[in-house]
Length: 321
Image 1 (cartoon, one colour):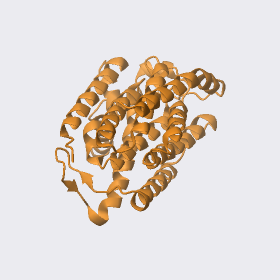
Image 2: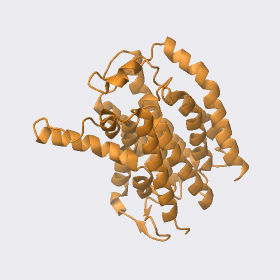
Image 3: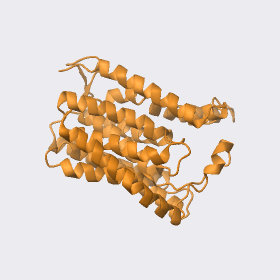
Image 4: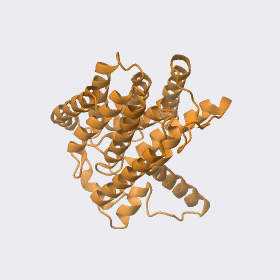
């Protein structure tokens, strides 16, 4: 393990830990509190007023750490851009909801437009300023790729937006999105180091930032990451996937994101088609388990363990090329 890897984790972790006691009271004074749905699990009602927008801790830690290494590791630039870009969309949404007291935040179209803009700039940079192909490595093969040709760009947009919003849906329990994405960040760090991809400073920075953030976010959470953090993490996962030419692996290591999204799609579709009937007690999926009597810590532990096992399976599928 080289010095850069260690320093990336340590610097990001320290920044996150030191900022927590400063940012969290500041957010509390601003009354940047979480609004809890009345139709959700009753145990969540006591969370009302807990500061949100804590994703600022993650964003700041990752950005500062990445800037320190970006000169020697220029390939982290597009990943950092996608991470910060999606984080800024989430920050605007959180700000409007909790500071401006507009419960809906950004409209669906405003949020989609922001995400599309960031994604298209990322794709443009990837095609014009890097040697990274949009063709995707097939899991289990060293020299086989899935290439959609002229459809590579629409596929990229679909994968990036799907990943970001899947991460966003996963952020619903104390420590859940952070713990799951920590496993994903470790996976990308191992692959980046093993392949010499040159993005390990940011993958390790995200791991360090999440370790620090989870000190304040595990149950009972003192702060929530909000869309600021969850969308930023989604951008990070998608960005790493494409820089490593491994977006197909996101379906493996990010299976929890996938299940959370599909649970919402299935619930809404079936609800409309059946005239009000439900498949799950509540969507996203983690709320279904809550209403079945599972504790938050148990659900978070299960989803994190599943992600860790899937990351191990994905590592076995990575073949040196």
